Amino acid sequence: DADVTQTPRNRITKTGKRIMLECSQTKGHDRMYWYRQDPGLGLQLIYYSFDVKDINKGEISDGYSVSRQAQAKFSLSLESAIPNQTALYFCATSDETDGGAGELFFGEGSRLTVL
Amino acid sequence: GEDVEQSLFLSVREGDSSVINCTYTDSSSTYLYWYKQEPGAGLQLLTYIFSNMDMKQDQRLTVLLNKKDKHLSLRIADTQTGDSAIYFCAESHSSGTYKYIFGTGTRLKVLA
Image 1: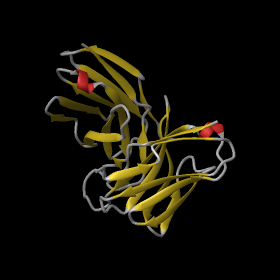
Image 2 (image 1 turned 120 degrees about the vertical axis):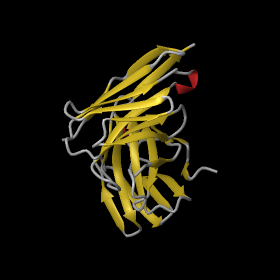
Image 3 (image 1 turned 45 degrees about the vertical axis):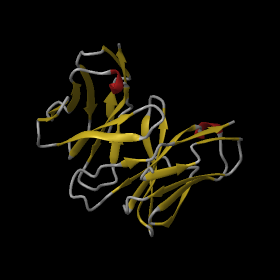
């Protein structure tokens, strides 16, 4: 089983609908992140959380919200989806205690299409 | 602000060496990374280099860092078809920081 699991893997929705992408991890990491990937743009940080009580905006948080329900769960919501939110979304975790380079561990991605 | 740039595509023949280049603007980078993304999968760390190093070798992978020119490269020796993927360069300021800046990714295509 994957250490970082995202659901759904694929979703097609209509403009104005509310969408939730869920992420769960079994790595025991405190730090979790949501990234968006667009072709030719690399990865952009939407939100990040260093623990259950700590939520922070990233570079492109407008139009998104998050909830950290537990150490292992971090969900991303689009309250009213719009077509330019069509993208591939990644959840990632990292371990603040690793004493090393702070490797990011990624889920397999959630492809969202907003019509 | 900080930026990381890569060329978008690279095509090589199987058995040749591949060199993927990256430039970055943040002189305070502490770690520089290479992540690999295979089709339908998330990114996976390939290797990283600490900013006080010039070179790091790991089997077929060689990372070169020119801190003066803010240039990072990844050389893959004896490139195989299984190396076909998107390779992302990234940098961060210090261990455990949230702030990772990713490049656009270079799509490597290996021709048989």
